[in-house]
Length: 390
Image 1 (tube, rainbow, N blue to C red):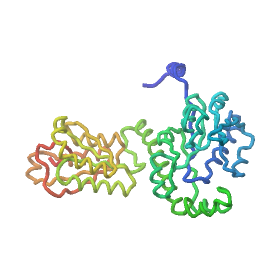
Image 2 (cartoon, one colour):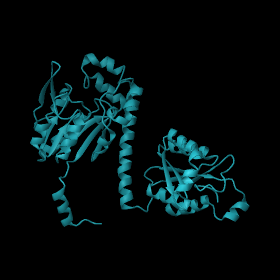
Image 3 (cartoon, one colour):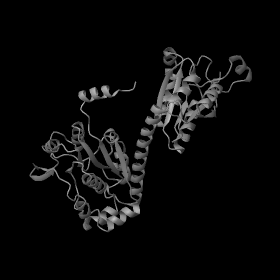
Image 4 (spheres, rainbow, N blue to C red):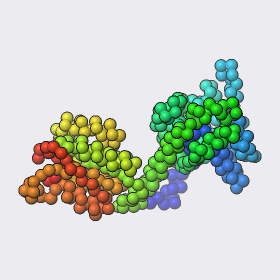
């Protein structure tokens, strides 16, 4: 349904629009996230936008501090905690100022107890966005919940401050601020990141070349996944009948029969080589067949979990049609099938095989198919799952 101008105006009367959210993501400290945020804020301010600084942490970097220029700053809130003085972002003051755009550094920051209603700065940001104020913020990849443990294993440094992935993915715009390990280490040596007394330890621990390379790879992959999700959402909405080769997306059809584990492992290796997620799909004729074969499929499902694949079950009378439709709905570029070992007489008696029909339907939809040979005895004729030859 297409919304008319009248209906859109009515919706606007009922729902208060939220602010726009932009996040600068970096691999490690010192790549230039805060600099980029301040530079964008300055450019918007000079063009006449109502921009304020909610909170910026310069970490004593003179060049970063110079980027503040004459952009208005919301005064910080002073907080005493356990005998120590702290300065935090004043959430109430930011909300009361109600600027068009607010710059808020360090999304993962933990607020000092008693400084406001929220424990984490990202919670403050969400409240500001809900108030209709746009926010530009920054975060390092190690603070994302999904990769924090991996970062800790890579660097040997614990990550205490974390941001849920969904908060960063909520951003209307996510931009990676990239820097090569060599360039970053040079900036460190020149004193542009840490004070002189901290440089030797940093270069020999967290800022080792291999650590920076690994963190950079994690950041690149996160942004690439985000871009892919946005592109797929657009393509599915605008062109649902076309499979787009923007990246490889792999699915494998499984059954509970002997040899399925081999097919699943081969599909996982294919997906790994092209850096693709793997979708595992099983088609059953009805709910009763799903219950009847639950025990024999347990090992297959467990293997799929171990391989990091997503499991899907579809109830359908026509396995071939269901598999190809799933592929179209999920923008799959390659379907992996297991071929059943059946005699020519069995194929003639049972008619066109599921594999043959998938090949035909997938070809019409522009989806590639990879057929893997099975080893071992095949499932009995009562098996209702796809793909089976016959």
